[in-house]
Image (cartoon, rainbow, N blue to C red; front, side, top):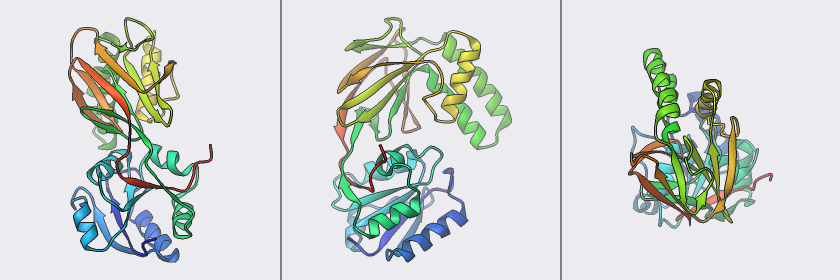
Length: 282
C-alpha cells in the first residue's frame, strides 16, 4: 500500500469546507498516509496517470460530489494505481456503494490497515459518458437547472427554471424503453438507470397530478430518487430509449448534464481503473 496520497477536492461540492478538508488531512496523517499534494479542482487540473507515476504516487483520494468523482475516475482509465472515493458531495452515491454507511475517517483507517479491496464496479455506459453511480434520462432532468440555481443562490433563475421544469415534465415528449420494450408505450418523463453487478436497474418515474410533479421535482433536487411515484421496469444489461417526438433526450450522468439525440443506447460495462472499497453494509 502506498504511504503517500494525493487528494482532489472541489469547493463547489456539498461538503468541501476548509474545516472538512483539514479534518481529512489529519485523518490521513493519523492513519500513516500523509497527503503529499492537495488539488482543488477545477482551479487545479486533474492529475494524469503519467504525472502520478512520475511522482511515485499509487493512490489518489477524491473528496467531492459525484460529478467531480466521475471526472477524475474516467480521466484515469488505464492507470495502474487505485482511487479512494470519499464522502464530499451531497448524496455521495458511489461512496455509499463502495463503503456502505461508514464515514470518511473510518474508510481511511480501513485503507491504511489494508482492509480495503481493489475493485472495478459495474457502470452504465452510453455514447455521452459513463455513469458510475447512475444515469437519468428524459425531460424530467430539467429539474437539474433548478438545483444549480439553488446552489448558486440565484432566486430569479430558480423560479424561472422551476416553471420550465414543471412545463417540460408535463408537456415535453416522454421517453420510452424500446429495446427491450419495458413499461408504458407512451413513455415516462424520467428514467433512472442504476448499475449493479448483475445488470442495471431501470426505474421509471411518473406523475399524474401537478402536486406529484412538484413532489418528484423536489426529490430530484435532493438527489433522492426513491421518493415520488415510480415503477421498477426490470434489470437489464442493455437498453435503448427513444423520444416519443424525435426530440433530443436530456441526460444527467452522475448528476452532470449531457445531451443525446432522439434515441440513446445504454450498456452495462466495468470501470476501467481500480477503486478501493472498504465494503458496503448491504
